[in-house]
Length: 384
Image: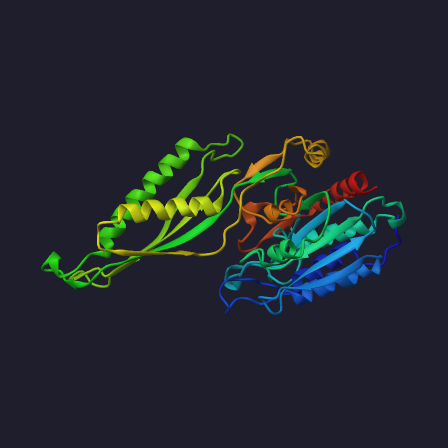
């Protein structure tokens, strides 16, 4: 076992929680994560890792941290993101930036999703004797997962790290997850012609045009759900949600513009770009003779769905280790980006997604040491 050169586990968690690292699509909330990346790098270096701070070129102040223990091909990545969502301090009973122990829980922003997991990964890695490693162990801490996946995209651009397997410590209640749905969000804007409501001929209603679009979307949803299903998911079909609509400005004016934002969650095997093309084609066809114009705007690039084979050695090892059959979840992770680099990926972490993104986020204390033991076992199996 390596000699201890990092702070005690709970001290590491507390220091990570104390460093604000909110990421957001709104500039007013976005903080960057460089301080967290450098803190993790220093700890990793102290027990023999080679470390790299990987700046995100499109987002100053944001970076990935990649630490490597051992040499050679293949190996295991243990990964997590360093950013958190924004928070409403007035709704918290505890200080969001202080790791507070109470009721067999550790409260703080990022305890479950998912800065605390990074400390657990370092703890597990620090207990390994580097001389016994036959394949490398990578500790990966990414930026921007809660906003735009900029850290994961940077990894794909650089094609690093190179490994056979990866574990992402998102909150799964210590149960392995081998697949999740994708996420696609689109804004649809219809432009017509405003006019006095006393005579329909004075204008061309964008709001009525949006009624046609909504009909097309509901038909599209029905067809998708008739043709695609996956019994592993609690909701076994792709979903399409009409999330936000706004049109017009006064009841005595024909509506000149109307916007609708939708959320579509595809199953593994469904391609986001293809779905976007189908959606555009159907709406354009429905509006062809209307005299209205339509514009589409992706609200973000989207997150692909992911599925790791049930027969993957990593899946089988995690199932044996936890006693649970690998599951499917509806939320997105960085798994498809690591999979795109040739890794088998599972999601396995101690937190509970039910309290993620909520006031008084917490991690159950009695899950901390068992998670470290799980990670140690995976390191031994895939690196030693």
